[in-house]
Image (tube, rainbow, N blue to C red; front, side, top):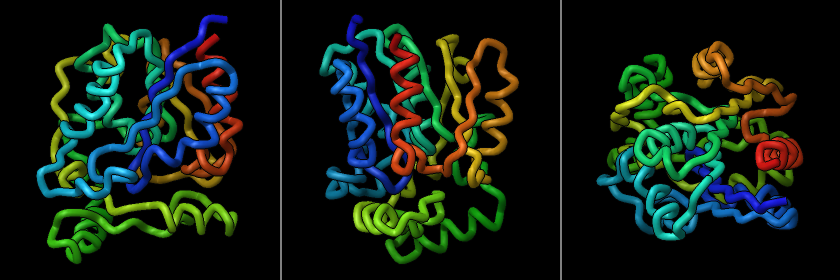
Length: 238
């Protein structure tokens, strides 16, 4: 078996740390794995700034791929990471082999994450950012992401950091359709369903040629059910 190269991109409030069980299993199977933290999050939380935008996040991942001289990358985005990998695939598709979206939301019609939210959700998001002077959004409890095991809840609540508001309020410019013609797998987590990605999941299910999968797990399945992610990614690599 030829080893594959994975780049795993986390979602809002998380960091590269959330991929630890998945990354460990993929490496044990002989694959190369990178799980960087986006600027301002995880082990890069000290870089939190009002200057961070969605383009910062996209450039984070582009630079990992460029600096490590990676080719044929299986690029995986969980939750908000879907926006990041969509931007990366728009810019450097020649470096990529397959896109895997795990319960992620798409940047439709050039709208920012905030612009795409229902009004009440957007106002709640902005209210949570008020304490930081509009720089970041405080993380919600882990249960919001379908994590109900007390031990995992404690781990997530301890590790999550504020999300840079600029990444949510800025628009991602795309020069190509979502996916940019690359092979795409989309995973919808269904128990419980995460309402924010319903429109994106419906879109993914309707795309000809895309592989659509459902998992009986909550939104943070990469934490609660890492074996599902490992099984899917190993199949993608084979």
